[in-house]
Length: 303
Length: 258
Ligand SMILES: Cc1cc2nc3c(=O)[nH]c(=O)nc-3n(C[C@H](O)[C@H](O)[C@H](O)COP(=O)(O)OP(=O)(O)OC[C@H]3O[C@@H](n4cnc5c(N)ncnc54)[C@H](O)[C@@H]3O)c2cc1C
Image (cartoon, rainbow over the protein chains, first blue to last red):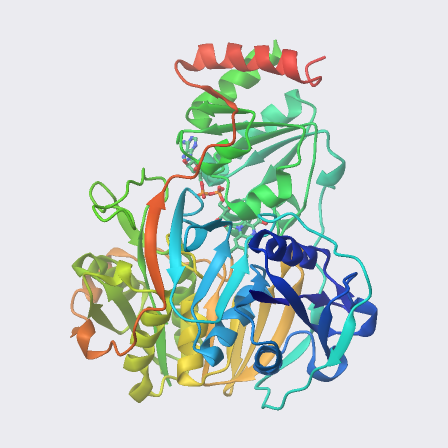
């Protein structure tokens, strides 16, 4: 069994989470080869074959050509699996490769299952097992689901080229907006989620943060609706924090939020839904209405 | 220009999910359905573009699914779409993302849409495949995970969102397909007059058999709750009591109250 792993580069560097692909391949018990659209400086610590296409020529975001490059490597390696990470690069490119290869694609795999793969559904509340029909099978892996593995060694490079029309023009990266408090230094963070209900309720969250001597964070919808500024957002597309105490108020626990706070020392979640996925990482899940529980907690703590 | 917006109806995610009789997806009993959150951004972006272009583009909504999806279609029409296509399929939940995309592409093929908007994923299945697969089937260029959109003279300039809040700017020419990410715009609430107007808009129904030409590449085999590995304490009951118990735990297990 063979897996062709598609690594990721940004700004000329290999993204560290690319090593999770090796972790997955080892769980699968598959031989490996890697495709990388990057530079020699981005080669992984890995003794196998790396099909290296020059990012200078093909660009870091150029899916029309990247899909052809992956296809060219597939033709040479004849893998059973073509494996991406479920990231902005992977979920963009994988379906295009699947279309070219006329292959099934299973997205956001979290585990191997009998004859198929397990993946989350219903906003991470549930799990689904699906069985792919046909080969090769295209997979994207949920970040963190398979621990990273650094195989070690120096890769055997194989140059990779492809022809094709690139229909989009990549104009460059723009750094994240970082305004307001630096949450990464906070020892206590109390975050507001959509379950807080409305902007007018936010002072209740701020008051709890104050009695605990902490800062206020937010989930994405709270920022998207303009209730709080972007700097407060915790998660994959916001800040990654690890305070001693994280209090999630009315936050469901989407994987993208968890990625930014699950390393916190102690996690309290306040949610009226006992099955909310935040329960997976919470040390304490208080099943209650935020607007009833939080003011009561603040009042008691203030005494 | 003609614009297509693909819309899915999904259950409220605060619902309690139970397996259906076959044990491969959720049972629909007791679930409340709504427009997929990501698709609301897609509808809004199409309507904003129509407004920008002085009302010229015609916006068609398309939804594949059982009869209940008409409610989602109505909401999109009330937000400002002009007409809708309901691809009637009581078994849409058993189709894989590739089949759903093929159905949409089979409809869109002859229609020469200048722009197609979809959500970047659905809340229930979350495959992130359908939009891209529609673009591939139609031979349209496509950008996913879009958080900013501009259009001028047939050129689309978008920002796609990457990890860590970094954005990448991409420019492309219509026809093109855009998959919309949360925060792209502020989806409007339909007003009462617009809800009334929407009732008169055309909704054509196409049985799925007319558009489905592809075999499934994925077979759904099981649907279940994840194995609980959390092991955290769950506090239920009266608020006053919950507060006391939580403060007790904070004293025992953390240093924040010292
Ligand atoms: C590529 C990508 C990147 C993303 N990046 C991020 C990110 O960086 N950060 C982030 O947070 N999200 C991110 N998201 C969005 C993420 O998927 C979720 O949509 C988001 O985290 C949900 O926020 P929420 O939990 O506040 O809202 P919801 O998911 O709507 O949850 C609200 C919760 O509040 C509870 N609730 C409702 N009312 C009450 C009440 N009165 N009392 C108590 N509880 C109540 C509900 O039970 C529910 O669990 C990203 C998504 C994508 C696709």
